Image 1: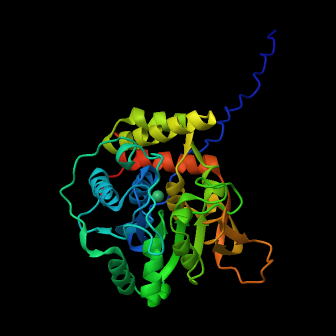
Image 2: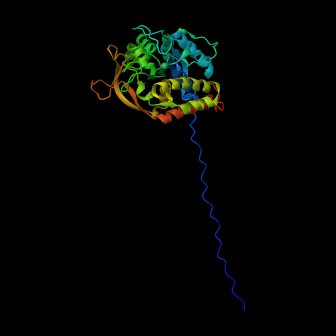
Image 3: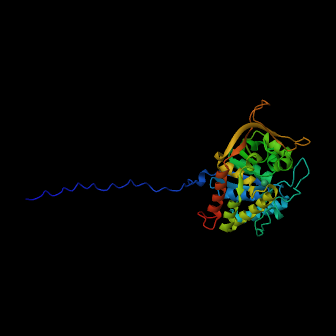
Length: 357
Ligand SMILES: [Ca+2]
């Protein structure tokens, strides 16, 4: 007698787990040069201007067609010299001019800060090699007028990171330029935060309040990035160390300049970090979504005993006057820090993904 053989249960083929597609790190979409926004940068380098220039030239969304200069953080001669040296550091195309502008306010005596916020030479004691470049032969105001005219209606964005003397002089002498400006994105003022020169005034507006007032009321699309947000968007010691550790010429220079600011900030506030005011204006141009904007009618106090240079922002419509600006009132600090540091490392770092230009 045979015993029945045990029946093996049918073997189910192993079920392969579904294959998850590999997770790619987020990649910024490439920006075609043809859609890059033409911009001019009016500045007074200055450490944060220097970092703003580095960020602008690392941003393919922007086509920086010229750098105009004005007295502010340091005198006009030093500002021009710093801008030329920074162009070498960045690798700016020789066709992009550095243009000398006003040596001080038109309506007031020049006022260079007594306190050396930006350190020796205006760049935190960082010595960049002398440049063989020379400034453009035109004055900044004449150059801006021609540049804006050539680019056509609403063709150019102006990023202004200094006292507004050049821009006010442009809009006063060449009112037709108003229609050629797509928008002005400026670093200046403190609508609701305390000032950094007086209790009420930020440096750029305090240095030339008449110019700031003229620009705010000139009828040009305007976005204002002031101390209300730049003081919140602090670059940290870790960010600075990351730039220093990279060690390439431009990242190391940025790290050393920011280290100067952070050391000073720590002495004053007990926190090893620093505001990079002007770089936030560039970021606001490329990535306005990083900022919370509030529509307001704005002007600048020119005659106050204690409030000279104060940015007045009527966000509740008390004056009944129509909105003439978008005022930055909030910022995604971590997103800005990541944007700034990653762009600098990506474009200038030792393992730069893209060539210098
Ligand atoms: Ca500046």
